Image 1 (cartoon, rainbow, N blue to C red):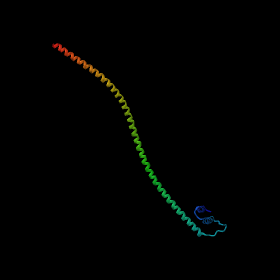
Image 2: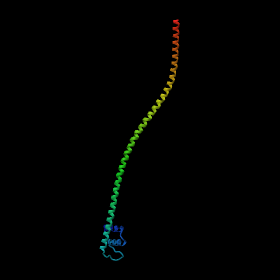
Image 3: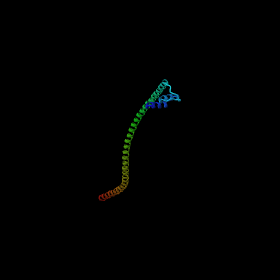
Image 4: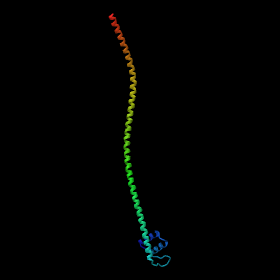
Length: 165
């Protein structure tokens, strides 16, 4: 039996033929007989079975090729959609990363401004306390100077009065 004949016999065994048809084809291909009788040529029947087998195989092949083509088209559409989605997600990620950098920089600047403001507030509070103290001192000095001046003016008025009398 040739290698092609063995392949054909294997294909016949795997096909959806009836047991009788399968046995007849297998017997023909192997050159043996079935039911221990001598083989009687029935080439017309075998050719018909082989044609039916060919048609069934071609139909199955066409159906499988169509399914494969449809699956390939679906896959390509899905692939294109996923590529588009990946591109948009990468762009969004880059935008958010840039925004994160800007916000981080702004945050650092705001923290520094807050520290500077706290230091300035401490200095302003100290200045305000000193200003209140200095104002009180200056007020006392002014009152003393005003009183001294009043006393001097009264003394001068008294001196002028004494000199005029």
